[in-house]
Length: 141
Image (cartoon, rainbow, N blue to C red):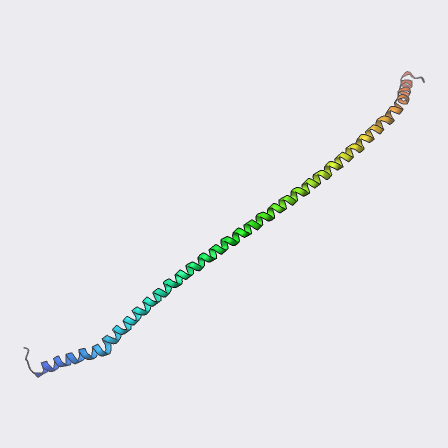
């Protein structure tokens, strides 16, 4: 059976003292530390979001600069390609004109050689014809 004596009152007082001490020594400091950690984490989250925003902004700037540089490089490459094509076309036209002039000179030279050969053969034609006729007939004409 439970008896009600002074030990019950002492135990109740003991319980109140223990609750008071634990509250002051353990619960309040732990709550305070947890609250500070929560505030610190919230501050870090704000810093992280600001850093992400700055990083995104910088990345966009870098991308824009890269696109601009790429455009300039492409324009320079296209310009160099066009210049090279024009130079190649000019060189090709020059080579073609040289070939045509060389061809024309050679044709003129060949025609003159043909004409000289014809004249030489025409001059000797009468002599050849007489010799052939003499050989065929077996007597001189």
